[in-house]
Image 1 (cartoon, one colour):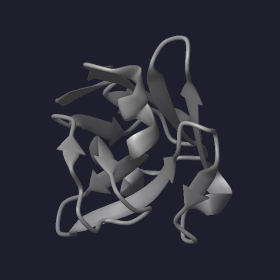
Image 2 (cartoon, one colour):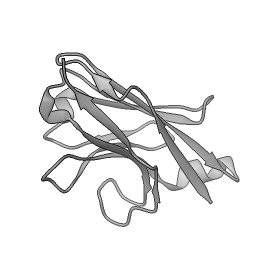
Image 3 (tube, one colour):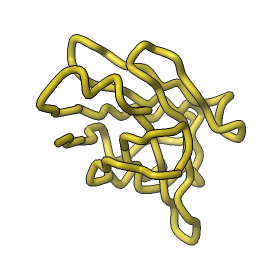
Length: 122
């Protein structure tokens, strides 16, 4: 069993950096090594967009369309992984999900957080 919980501010101003954290709750720490820990978002009128992922060893993977603005990392001491999305605009408004997946893609997402609405507005 894995439970994921997103946390972070729901409102971000344009040009600022969006920062979200996802806390992983598992029965065994070894579970952390089984998944690509992933960030996904969904904005109005669009489908799910894979943003990127980190594995527990630390390697990262990013969507080419977002790579220049995205940083994903993990904190082993807190059992968390984080998303930083810089230079946000209103088109970054979306529901953001953290997830656990077998691959660095939307294929076969195994674990989902509940999602958090993030609005970019001044």
